[in-house]
Image 1 (cartoon, rainbow, N blue to C red):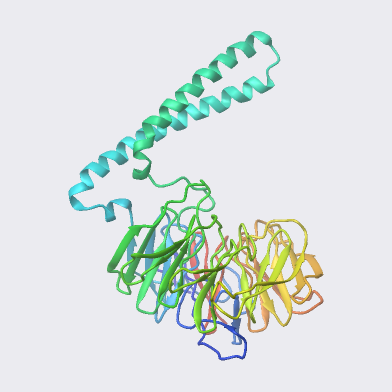
Image 2: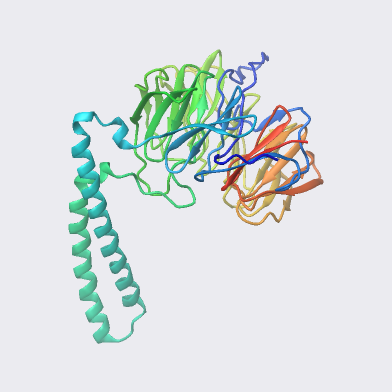
Length: 466
């Protein structure tokens, strides 16, 4: 086992070639990004089925910073992210880091404006700290007021709350001119680098929870970088960028279509913030994306073909054989139209069901007429893809939270949680467990390619083989 001095995660992805089928909707070729083609199905291969922190580990690399993003593989190189906003490239053979490319707001500010922007960052941080302190005092006073029964104390606390309310307003006014100098607030588990990079084979594209997107060549030269849209909800972003034909698509608050060569905006479609990554497919020869918010968008020009297909807060939809599946807090299956003309396109709801009302952070897999999904607390469900009926549910007792998406590889389902545990399950209408394995904690989805499994742990990157 080899452990280079420094490295951050590894996870490989490669989209299969376009397969011609009679249906109007087929999988797109070319892009290398999150979860292969968005289905989570890898195909056949001689992959490892047994591993631990020592067993089967071909090399292990210490990561300089954690990230939830799944790395990608382009040729003999691995590309992955590190907190808060760094793209890292490593040698796929041994995990040795080749280069790192951090990205900050100062990198896109014209040189003549950098000094002023830096001053604004300093003032913004000062005013943010002041606001945080007074908000903390206000919340404490409100809690004391709610639980205090003494009338004199209540009067004193009521006056204190009113005073602190005014101080919060003043602090927010002072901060307002400098908000765009500071990175948005995020949730600590999510961080800023949960979005997986995507590549066309010659360039690598990234998006961070700072609102910044960028493109690099394979040697680390930055080709362009810009602020596209800043998340504002305070919980971070995890929807990965996708390539739909010759359009780079980002789902932030709205859905943005960018020119991959320049980063310039081609189109913007109104939407609602979601954490799930858009799925790319093809309808009638046209590249389209299906968003977690239920938009169906033509990638070339941003035409909204249909909306309201479904609504997933946390995970991504899955498209298979002309049908889009939305599994979360229940489920919905819709047949996609055979045209991208919004005047004639019709979307047919095939079924709507209500599996246990729970969060699904992990995205599901559809295989041989069955949908495989897992709730945040390890309840594994199989759903009939034709009817939406739940076939069986099983508590996998993984511990932690099931963030990694399910992968079907070599005819075996890999189901993981951030505890580092993975259960191998046989596909089918009855539960059959094939094995259990464990590494360090990880939230990214393991990648399987060329007989290897790459796992980006919170502290190490692993290459696992037989």
